[in-house]
Length: 291
Image (cartoon, rainbow, N blue to C red; front, top):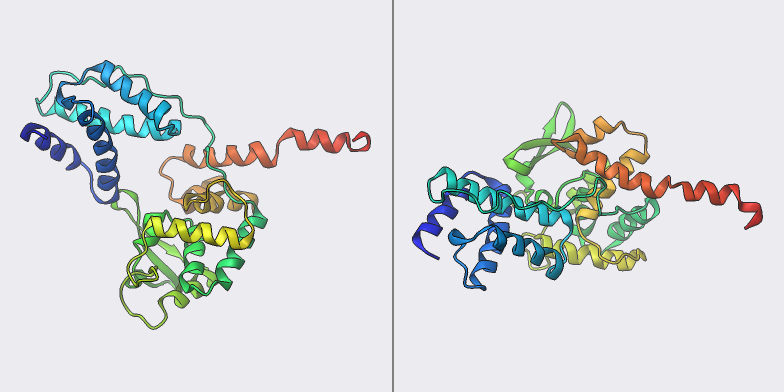
């Protein structure tokens, strides 16, 4: 990597902080590696190269449209910063077409019975961190980096409520109240410890998203929850859809999930409605006597 390119990358990443910088860095490096393997200087790339990168993400890596759109947005932001800083005269990503992102979320949450089975399996697990993991994701709606990044020092009380101080996206801080079940799960996880991560691995180190995914897949097997690919975000998705099923107002769900844009919450709601309230069920019930 040339000195100019290193400086351009550093200048772009400096615009972000916290987890946003980590995720942006990961997406940008994915593009830089793609260029390197093809002998292409990213600062000499043209629009056709960016188009080929998008096709590669879609057809070779087979990423979801939302992932492709996010990665392209990072690349476009990088080149836009290069133009601002005078490194390039114009951005090669300026006229690249963005993939269409469906209005509904492609991720499906667990059904009510599946979620209950996961909670039961986690509560009965000999690994005391399993129950805390499932409740923090499914009953608090934390993102996986928020759950694994939470420390014992983040626990406290506010106006009579047991709360967890969460470091969210964009380095935003939120106080999340802990229902009794979650509080008990966390107390069980921390045991007699007074400092350090809430969630630990079997080696006593901080749990990361990879370890969390393995634990969730193990619990899903024990609970008899048959899914093609269990991952942590499914429980956050379940948090949102279960709230909506319970009759919580969409605006209140948006606040609980800490979605900056209400359209994000609505994507979850559309996916839920498409299945649970599909007209096929009404038609089948209407024709029950003939079937």
